[in-house]
Length: 248
Image 1: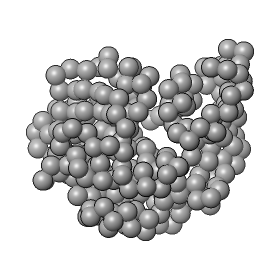
Image 2: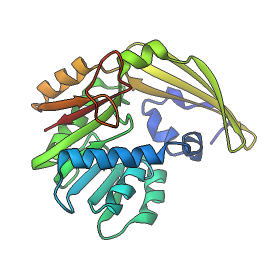
Image 3: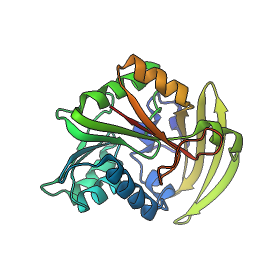
């Protein structure tokens, strides 16, 4: 990769950033205990049948998929990042599979549940792709299946945004600048590694509950419930950290 290449200029910023080892270094301290608690709570709430089939959309390196499989579910994880799927493939077994796949396109099977976790939605520059992704989620649900989107609560996040911070992980100091512009939350990330300068910019659309409701109506989907945290407490627009949408 050339030095000082600004990957934010690429339309699909996630295709390049997610495929670097530095993305996984920056986010290596994600709370696995919290993720497992959420999966236990969520699957109990949905009352999924034994050995239910789950599609984990934008699965990354598979941390949720691997845990869901460990508690008895038949899981397929899909992600656009070839590097992430190559890592996840090491954990495959007869009831755990991973595949490189674009979330805007339906997968070739239907499932008892479709999960889209850890703010893995709203990346797209083309507004139509958000709707395409939701339509793909719907297409991948069987007749009794439930969909779940775990998104951030924009109404709380934006007023409390920390503009500038530094984070050092594995000897790499990441300089992070967050800002809001044109309906998106941006996170600009600069760092030096192995003698080269890198810059990436994450972009997530600042979607509110009203925005999702409009998407669901257009996609002929039904919003069943909205929770505000991983304990599945009711959503409060001013106080909740997360916006967890349950739909069919």
